[in-house]
Each structure stands twice: as C-alpha cells, then as structure tokens.
Image 1 (cartoon, rainbow, N blue to C red):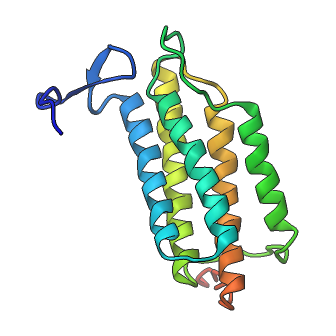
Image 2 (image 1 turned 60 degrees about the vertical axis):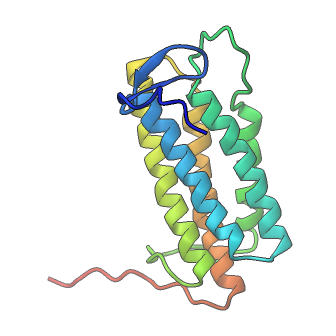
Image 3 (image 1 turned 90 degrees about the horizontal axis):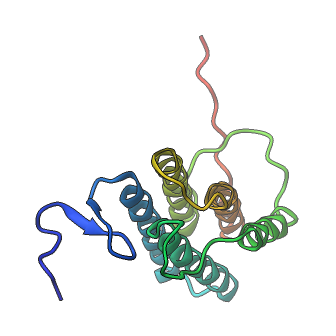
Length: 180
C-alpha cells in the first residue's frame, strides 16, 4: 500500500497536522520504531520463554510510546499514553534482573552472546530515542512521562544484556583505559 502523500518530504502526525519528515517529533517516534525493530531481531534469535515474554511486553509499551510521541498532547483523538505505571513496570523488571547479576564495578564493553550484543545495540538506540524526545519536547509540549520511561528502559536493556551474557556463559569484557 502507498498513498504518495509523503513524496514531498512531509508526513502526518496522528490526527491531521502535516510536518516535515525530519521534524523532531518524527525523528523521535522514528527512533522508537527503530528500537522496537532491534528488539524484534533479538526475539527472532531466541527461544527462551522468559526473554520472549519480557521483550514482547516491552515492544507493546514501545508501540504505545511511538503513538504517544506521534500525537500532539492536546489532540482531540484519544490515544494510549505512556504512564508512570509503565515506568514503574520497567523499574520492576530491572530490579528483578539486578537481583540475578553480580554488582558492576567497571565499565564493560558491548559484546558477548549474539542476544547480549544486540541488546546493547538496543540500549544505544534507546538512548538516541531519549535524546530525540528531549529535542522534540523543546519544540512543543509532549507527554512528560516519556523521558523517565526511556531513561529506565535503557537501564533495563543494559542489564538484560548482562543477564543474557551470564546465561550464555559469556564473561563480561572489562574496559581498560589506556595508560599515559
């Protein structure tokens, strides 16, 4: 399916307002979509039920976040919004992982297992989504819960990567600064 409406470099926000495809809001929800796709790559490579369940839950929240970011706060069209309960849920998921992991005393390099490395990529994309949301929120009012949600989500993805590497028997590679 195609409409040709975007051929001139514009798109519609949820509702009717047209904006350029490089609008900060479009950059933000586009990066959220990219993050969701990276998580899809992790899901495609695993059969672990617990990982599948948690990432599927996160993907559902990301669809809400993408729609939230694509919809003006004062929109007459009702859309689900990221709420403090979503942020708390991600915190609970992170706390559960931290209880299974040794304390981190050094910076570690991304890598390890395929799923662990891809989750580190997801974490980096999540941080970019957060930066894009900061930029978009400077241009116009957005749901203030989006920023804490993505901040917590990046921590969750980092710790989920560590947990996947631990389960795969992959040792964390400690970053060592150069001397001199």
